[in-house]
Length: 154
Image (tube, rainbow, N blue to C red; front, top):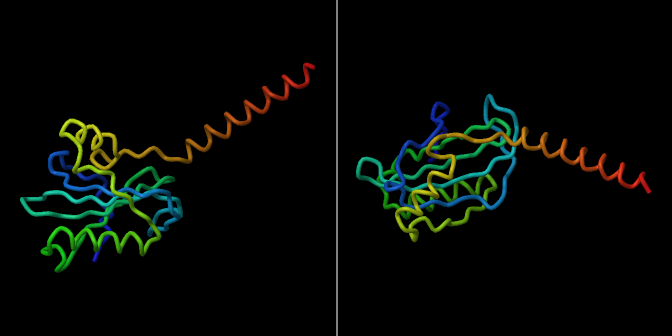
């Protein structure tokens, strides 16, 4: 069973400890207690934790600009890694997410490190999409105004 850890905001491990990453293909609407309804992307990460494999499911919350981590609890934490990953995939699918393997295990160490650092999981920094939407909307308005002025000039 995966349990939400509301006080966890990042996954403080290095790329060398990461074994496997899956990421969503598209955002899905979610609602968490105390947070507004919003779209979220998701990650399923397998990694070494104290010399044992562990699996974490993370939501990238678009409006809140943060991550929400779910840790695997119970008997499955002692299961082989593949069973833990299968449980994570079932959990993701139950929330409406479709995951895709990013091929982390096939990358060279420097490429893997670069990919890991490019994801928000290690540092917990997520850019809220509400700000991006506002910027895009103002850009569209500006473009529309410029196009209107151009057409009027004829």
